[in-house]
Image (cartoon, rainbow over all chains, first blue to last red; front, side):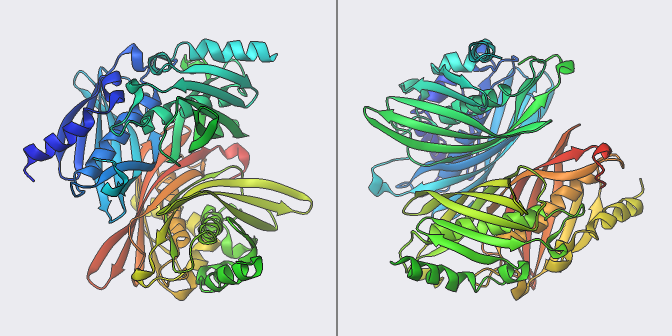
Length: 146
Length: 146
Length: 146
Length: 146
């Protein structure tokens, strides 16, 4: 599949994630086994100290990991998060955030994906989170797509 | 501290979490070491198959765990998520969701908290996620509150 | 399957785990979806401060979780650990330890299992660890058994 | 501190971990923020299918992560595992295994460390596990050392 078609496949699914629109997140880059999502900071995603909420960071990294996995699955499969673990490395302070998912192992039934989140503030780019996620490869027979 | 005052303490911090308002989440119950948060389903929190996004579930469980930890901290301390791990047990399908955090161990520097999420649909109540989280006890000297 | 036969099925597999013998661990209790393993303390399982090594605790809880999952699988299936996360709640100090695995959800392809570890010292019984684990249901076609 | 002294500091603590001797594990490489441990395969560390037990792999990666953290701590501090999560990427089959810990963030109270395990078989070197761990920085006042 060309990279254009791959981007379109992921973008079609991403467009159906209402939560991405709610958070203002956009699909930034799609290559086989690797996806980047961006999200601007706004008070709408804050926690009580004014940082981006750990949940908002986890959400975009989870989506980046899920879509990184989906890029390596046949077109009749869908992806569902089985589990993830996230470590917050620093308070999520920045004008926007980047979430990157990179597939470590693509198995027949599960894909293991590493995620990371970066806070961008002017010229500064600081890693604020790291994730390990397990993504399920779902059969088309379930009726689920992408 | 009376349970009313404890609820007020947590509610004051909860009210500053912009993301809770964005997700339509509300603080439901606060007792020492235990907090429940509710969130209605809406397309604004969906993933691509129409379920609630794993990230939205993780977010309310993370907040419930963080606030469960905060109920056991002295008033001059603040709470920050150090890390969490979530297993999704079933697709998050329901009219609303309940997230519960219960402190397993309150330490001097970190609290370990177990979280769970339930999907409610009419008379049915099904567990859709389980979490283990580590919450940092932050000194007032950092300038962070609650 | 009777509880006796179930115990025999798990014990047959447990007996092939060389590491259980090395650690002095024994299979204590097997019921559907729940398994307990015991391990005595000895310097052979210590870390540098004289506590039981986090790895030895993780090992018996992982085995208890895996076997709890296996009790719920058809006899032509095998179990493999996909991932686990463990929180250490207190230093593992005791004359022996108990690891308990309890299945939270038995799926077609993965089982999610909660684990716990307890340190026993005389009359005292203290929880020292909590685990969440994902266990893979492996097809007999792979040649793996139990 | 010179790299020789750093190796000696870590080796002195490693030598007190009875479990490392029991597993036949050795300290291979120590640099600031990075530690490698080796472990030969033997039936004494096996699970029921003849692979190295997930617990034995987790144990050496946990130790590598803990010691990677300790290399960055002042000499009056000790290290304790707070929690870790491990994903098994492939069955642990090899003549020996390498566990590597690399510090991602060294904080005042906790260090976040990434771990990995590799199986070596002749010329082949295959990654079999990935870990994220949180290590506590313990004050000397507790009486714990290294």
